[in-house]
Length: 282
Image (cartoon, rainbow, N blue to C red; front, side, top):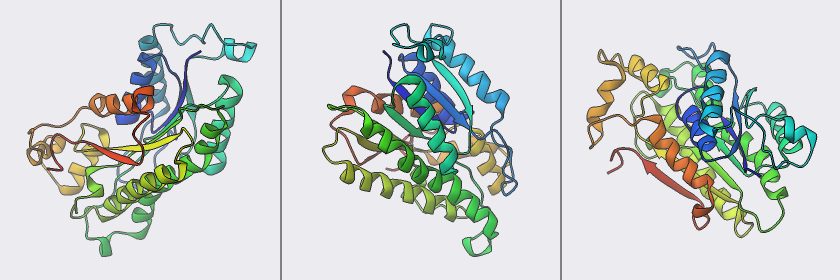
């Protein structure tokens, strides 16, 4: 029977690439996205059509057209797709608890949760940024991870011993670098890093680990939105110059580390914040 993962922020960017990567490795994946815009932000978020396209791509990557695991033991699991799209708000604890409960009911349990939902706003000093925009960034980038930990870790711990559960989050190089006019984003991602370190200590010898990846500038719609906040005429490509490798990362490069962290080989690693940043943190 394949292992079961939930991924938030799955319609685009790193979340979408992680859904594809996990599916290609044989995982059963529940791909979650809110699929609606946030009026507090100045750009469009992922859509239902994008989420469904990611799921279709991932099902093809799984090599079974999205079919359920043939080794499943009951009718619900036999009829369940290997890769599933779910529209839910990552910052809503009730909605996310329902997503986790349904994954357990249909697929028999939860083995990994990847908290990749995020959003960006800024373009002004912290004291001038409208409070609703600041709150949107904190909710999307930090509160969503707090909610994920609250609803997912108990499910990971419900797996019988010896466990190998994985709680994973997407932090950012912004967690350790002071980026002008992106103070809320820096604060939120630093919060993600601190949370993951604490979870690693709290989970201790439970068999469940907590880790995060810390991407540099990655070619995503959110990076394009960041370029517009800075008024960069060359768009997201302008950020390549700040990274020692002089290039942007692709979402699949970040996802590859998340897929590895979700697997059995990462069992000796917990409370870690691992950079995938083209050298930005040097």
